[in-house]
Image (tube, rainbow, N blue to C red; front, side, top):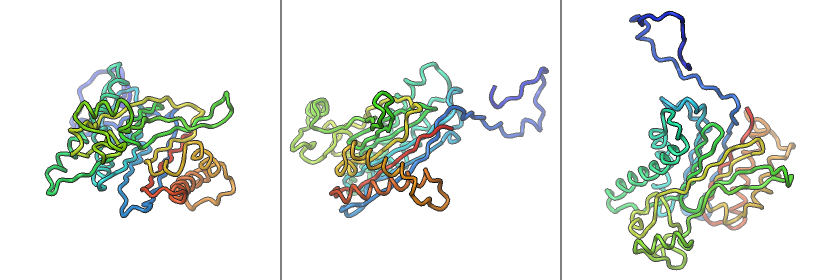
Length: 321
């Protein structure tokens, strides 16, 4: 049993022992992939920065209790705000905390299903809490935000997203002997059939590719004035098992994709992370310098290629322990 010393005799705990703090949960990291996250933000031509980002490479110690099968939890999220920065900042600061509180604490045999339910309820809670805060203000806050979040439980990724920010996984294909970026999220655009049907059923309209002719995304946190029009806070959720062929995760808002397609992104990043001639930054390994450089240059290049939007890029390297 973890955290307990078993002896052959049974005895009552002494007063001195009872006053001792509980033994810290011993966590085995053997066989787990390591994460190291890097981020870059550019304001672009916008007046202010409305994106937000939360990268937590290992938050296992944040939990007071976890199922015995869970040895490591990590969390990464990118939030693209619109109509202001309050919704994105709120989600960045709050969503993971709500998630940790709701996360399964014991083994039930249905942890996979429980984690997915936990994610759905977390998004609903975060949206409701922000809307309550927004509606109490005078004038009412009109802010909204997309969200793309990845929670890593051991070596399994659970990806939850709203709107048009994306998560991708760089994986080496042994059969083709080449790297590729695998989409891990699903875009929510009002012109998509299922999204448009939900909006119209709620009494909303889609004009010029936007909800009520205004909002570009059909799911988001916040956007209180569009919730009655069918704009949803329920995320799409995907699951992905990590393998030895995986190199890194890429999370980015739509500002990146206005300057890059996935193929060009992969080529751009690989050229930098494979460059052995890069001068190592103080306090960083060569690999850390490569990823940090790739992240920053990718964000800057998106602006140079004509993206006028805010750009936020997160690269999370994946390596063996």
